[in-house]
Image (cartoon, rainbow, N blue to C red; front, top):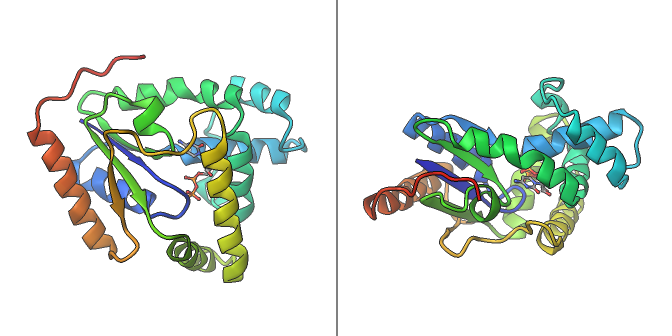
Length: 217
Ligand code: CDP
C-alpha cells in the first residue's frame, strides 16, 4: 500500500507521515528533503538560486547522501527549495527516485506536494493535510525555536503565505489536493488526534478494495 501525504508548509504532514509509517511498518520518504538538497547544493556552490541551468546540472549529478538533515531544515533552505521546486527540469529529474521508492514491495509512505497528483496518482490512500496559515506559522515558529533559530511570528507567517503562493501558483505540479484525496484539516487537532483521523481514512480506503498495481504513467 502506498500512502500519499500532501499539503502546504508546516501543515503537520511530515509528523503525520512519519507516524503513519511507524504504524503500518512502511518505509517513509520526505520528498521535501530532495528539493531542499538541491537548494543546499545551489547555495553551497555559490549559484544564484534562480539559475535553472545550474539547478538542472546539480539534479543530473544528484547524489543526496552529502547532507545531514540538520543542514537542510533551516528557514532559508525551505524558501530556496520552493524556488528550485518550481523548475520543471528539477521536478522531472527527481521523479524517478520517488517512484522507485514508492514501488518497493509492501509499499511506502511519501509526503510532499504532488505525491497524490503526479508521483503516485494510483495510490489508494491519499491525504491532503491542511491547517490555517496562522496555526502553521505557530507550529513552524516552535519548530525553528527548538532548532535554535528563533524568528518573529509575523515574519514566519509571511514566509508561509509566500511559499503557499509559489507552490500553488507554479505551472508544473502545483500544490493541490488530488481529486480522490481526503482533506484533513489539523488546525484544531493534536498529533494523536490527527494520526487517529488519518488511520481511519487509510482503513476506509483499504476496505474499499485492493490497490491498483503500481505502474509508471
Ligand atoms: O516542511 P515544509 O513544508 O516547510 O517544507 P518541505 O516539505 O521540506 O518542502 C520544501 C519545499 O519543497 C516546498 O515549499 C515545495 O516548494 C517543495 N516541494 C515540492 O515542490 N514538491 C514536493 N513533493 C516536496 C517539496
